[in-house]
Image (tube, rainbow, N blue to C red):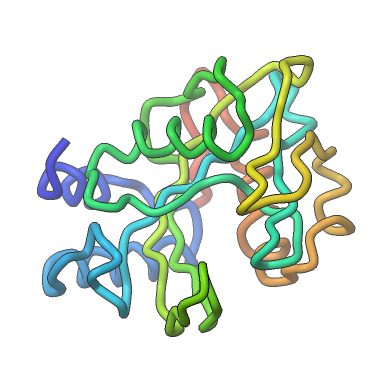
Length: 198
């Protein structure tokens, strides 16, 4: 997939709520006007991908305890120049969890969001505050499959019940705006299609 094809896929995406409508507009604006949007060379905003991985019953989510954020959170990472975000998502899942067997519930983009990242130290260097223009995919996996941590990024990995996310994640905005939305969307899927609210 090329950057232009990714932009068209995002343009065709039907937002689920006001947050997605507004974030979609800004993601497209950034993609049309900014340089190096697929790489961290754009230090203001760049494309990232997240994987919302659930069990078949949609009652559990695979999450990691991220050392940087000191919180349980979803899996994912930077595009780093690759517009094939589904391939990037699979790579990040393998790296962060060791999970090899996972499938996309739907081939389409599942969610869009703009995420703020506070300035922080990474591998001894300061990274200024910036935006992640994030694309999320919904995936499914068997909770019985073996997992492993990625020691330089997370210290725990495991399946968390959807009712536990609010207690386990310390990132209030993610819990209220993003994770709750993703659970609601996943549970509203019928035959791979979302029921978009009016």
